[in-house]
Length: 276
Image 1 (tube, helix red, strand yellow):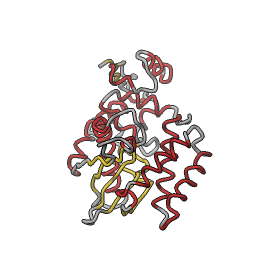
Image 2 (spheres, one colour; image 1 turned 30 degrees about the horizontal axis):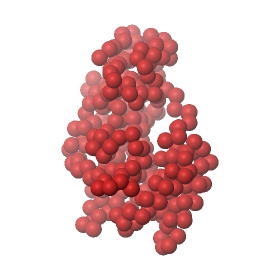
Image 3 (tube, rainbow, N blue to C red; image 1 turned 120 degrees about the horizontal axis):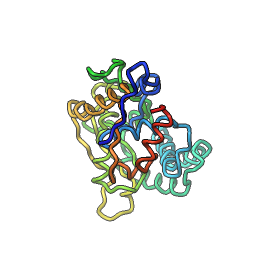
């Protein structure tokens, strides 16, 4: 672990860091997965979030638009509604691969488990607020806000959170491990925003469609207590960031998916932004 000096007391900590993960600058659930790696990658990626999402991200957004329309429509026109929504979403997500998106959505819609599911909420905005750590100088609540893919009601009446993943860079096991923290965030956010009875469901891993013996529905069972425990490290990392203590953790694994790699480019970028 490599660190830079603290920024000379709280008066010298830039507002962008003091307000990190607050109501002014909330975190996205997708960012929370990276706290176990290198937290500074999150800080730097949040500094400039106005750019395009990229081909893979935009393709995923196209699929999500189609899935929302599919579950918002009844009868024989569900698939056509999803296809139309996907094409219309190209204006907002121009980098998306329409052909791939239609193919992924088609496989999703053909899956009986999806077609017959009772989706209570789909593409719903949710917010999670966590109490700041005792060492956090701001004592501002940690705020994580994003769009939850789905909450389904099972035949037993239980409400569960499901996340649709369209990327194929990871296999099923890696996907579950990678997104366990994100699922914990969505579950707790859904409990605070929608219904306290909601619990975790799992991942709908669309790359599994069309593969022999592959399972697209990957269950992930986490209790509310486990969800809170998984987020404890995040709470303390946020406290360090708000203190102006930048900690970098360069490694092959941590840097592989970082948008500001390689080390020490990220350190130099941080210094340039915050004057350290």
